Length: 476
Ligand code: GLU
Image 1: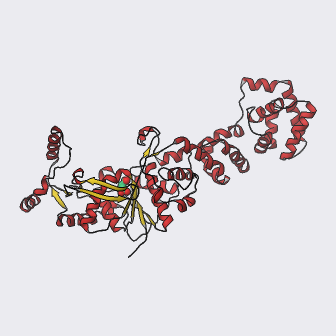
Image 2: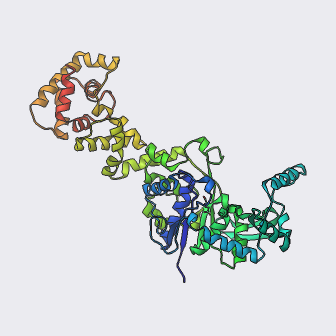
Image 3: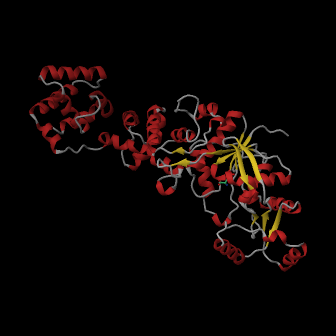
């Protein structure tokens, strides 16, 4: 049965979603959407020693927060499940046994002590430290005796020891590995659980994965994987290994140098649209210089051909710039909705929705993070505290004249539109013979707490007549 393109994101849950993993998920998602294929989420959780409570929930929740929807996987129907490897362990041993029968794997009874000694000797002899393959040579009789004895064992892959393997990666083209660099990988551990390598290959085959798109750190596993495919008589998927993500100093992006968890970025006030757009460009570029893409646009623009081989620098400044762009350009209601929690945290009373939206519309032009919005809104929700210089300006004769004139005029009429406020400014100037800075500064200080700032109309519009009057009256 020909199923079309099937790709997967196969994380081992670590408790948080790394930005590099989000890129892997995104590229797989985009490739599936672009080609009309299927995007599968498979949880690689066979390593019981790394089990972290709540890690899978967190992972799924984060994918949802950034809107990356998968077609098959946990919590979804799909004919290739279960999608948790921990629920598939029985499947893997069958294939390990098949590899043993075919002479492509063997039981290894070496104890931790044996391995330790082997390592020490190799170090003393200045050799690479790796399993030396001694259990390859056990006779059938020896094996049966150890089995009858109940000796614990692991199952190892028996890779070729000479020659080289050549394969083609969609990103890196031709790749060559000498077999002597490849070790006899453990496939099944002594507790009976499979390692990543076996489970990954078996599942990619059984789930009919056509393209494996993942980080470059897995490239060196390919010889072992291809060997397994060959020995099991399976056709391997096509491979695309994504370049490393680097800090500006070209070191590998790591937790030590700052945030790497997608959740941290979201909680700080970066938005899903920004993260997806930014991360899409970490190792991929569109035709031309275009940098701004919605997810929908990426779905049509994306192509594996334009993934680059060289490392991609994670530039925080660019990320901020991009977030600023989306803050200004996404629908106002969306921003208002997302910023709400930060206002509530700051304990601003945002029950007046009309005012709140006006504040958002003002503040979003001035920030690059959602979380910075309340800071830009403080003067609309809190009483202004004036510094000495402001107080001096407020106390001046001219300022007092302006305030009194405005109080008188404003009280004459219920509501004022933009034109009327601008006319009032002209009238004030004409009647009081005060103009320019001497006119605007006192008004802005009174209403906004700073001589520099938005148009007087904007302030009036956000605060409303009552609040403007209240603020002016307090100063005369
Ligand atoms: N479980 C591996 C990881 O955590 C998956 C690697 C792969 O995609 O094959 O990254």
